[in-house]
Length: 302
Length: 328
Image (tube, rainbow over the protein chains, first blue to last red):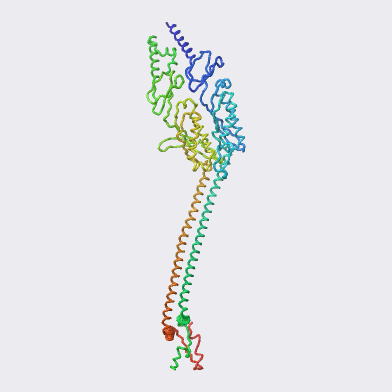
C-alpha cells in the first residue's frame, strides 16, 4: 500500500512534467525560438497563446517583442569647433528577426554591448563632424541676421537621423531594428560651462548697459525737446507781443497824425503848453523879461 | 497559492499523521477547488481597467466592478489605471504634496540644465501629465513605458529649448515652449506606440543658471533705471512746458492790453484835441491867449525863483546870484 502510493505519486509528477514540458505560453510581448539540442527548429513563434513542443528534447528561447530601451553612456565628446560637451543619448530598438538575433547575439546583454559600440561610435562621428550649434538647434531662428543668432545647416534632427541611418545599416545583420535615436542631454563640460557663464554674465552686463544708456539717451532727448519747446514758446510769445505792440503803436500814431494834421500849428502850441507844465517845477529858476508877453503889462497898459 | 507548485511530497508533510490517506486526498481536492474558485473572479477599481490575457494572448478588457475569468494558468489579468492622471517631474521632485506643497530641486540639475539656441544655458524645470488611453498598447508595445516617457520628455524639451534664445525662454516664450513640447511629445508617444496621451506640459521654474542669476537681475534693474530716467525727464518736461505756455499766453494778453491802452489813449487824445481845435477855430486869438495864460497860471506858482529883467533898467545885473538860491 505504501509503495503503491509512492509510485502513483511519482507517476503523477512525471506525467505532469511531461505535459507541462509539452506546452508553453507565449505572451503578447514575447516571441519564441524553439531549439532542439541548441539548433533552431521551425520558424520563430510570434503569435501569442498556448504552443506545443517536444518535451525534454526541445527548448524554448524567449525574446521580447516590444520596443526596448537603449540608454547611451554620458560621454565627453569634442565638436568640430572644439567645444567639449557631455552627450547623453537614448535609442529605442526591437528584435526584428529573432532567429538572426538568436544566432548572432543570443541575449539582450550582448545586444546592448553591440549597440553601445555602434551607437556610441556613430554619435561620436556625427558630433565630431559638426559644429555645436548643429546639435542644439533643429530649425533656424525666424529673425536671422540679428546679432547673437546662429544659423544651422543640418540641425539636431538631421544629425539624429544621420546616426540612426548609419547605425541601422550596421545592426541589420544582427536581427535588430533601431526605431529611433535621440540626443537626450547635451551639456557643456564643467570648464566650458564656467566660460559660458562668464560670457552670459558679460552679455547681460552689455544689455544692462544698453538699457541704462537708452534711459540716459531718452532722458536727454526729452530734456532737449523740453528746451526747444520752451524756446519756441517764449520766442513765439515775444514775437506776438512785439507784433501786437508795434501794430498798436502804429495805429496810435495814425490816429494822432490824422487829428493833429488838422491844424499842425495849433497842435504845436497846445503841445508846447503841455510841455511847460511838465518841464518846470519848483527847482526851476525863471528869468522873465518885462518885454515878454506876460509881463508887458507890468509896465503899464500902453 | 498556486496549485501547480504543490507536489505530493509536500502535501504528505502537510497532512497530520493521524489522518487517513483517503481523507487526505479529499482535503487536497477541496483545497485545489478552493484555489480555482478563488481565481474565478476579480475586482477592477473605478479608475482602472482590467486587461485579460488567455494563455498570454489579449482577449478582452474588463470594466470596473466584479468580473469573472477562467482560473489562473488559463487567463490572467493586469489592471491598468486608465483614468488616473499620472505625472512625471523633471528637474525637481514634489517632496510633500499638500496645501503647501514642498519641492526640492537639489541634485536634479542634470535633468534641468540645457543649452539654448544662442548657446547659453538655462535651467528649465517642468512636469508632464499623462494618461494611459490604450491599455493594450501600454502593456504590450513598449517595455518600461515610464522610463521611455521620461527620456522622450528630456529629448523633446531640449529640442524645443534649443530652438529658442535664452531670453525667449525666460520671458515671453514660456507658454509657447510648453505647447510645442506637448505637441511633439504626443506625436512621439504615437510613434512609439506607448498608448498614452499627454494631457499637459507645465513649465515650472525657468531660470538662468545660479552663477548668472545676479546679472540677469542687473538687467531687470537697468530696465527699471531706464524707466526711471525717462520718467524723470518727462516729469521735468511736464513741470516746465505747460507753465511756459501759460506764461506765453499771459504775455500776449498783456501785449494786447497794452495795445488796447495805446489805441484808446490815442483816440482819446485825438478827440480831446479835435474838440479844443473846434473851439479854437471859433475864436482863435482869444482861445490861444486863454490857453497860454492858463498854462502860465499852473506853472508859475510852482516855480520858486523868478527873476524879472527889465531892459530899460541897467546896472542891476547881475541880480542872479547863481548857486546860493538854486538848491541842489
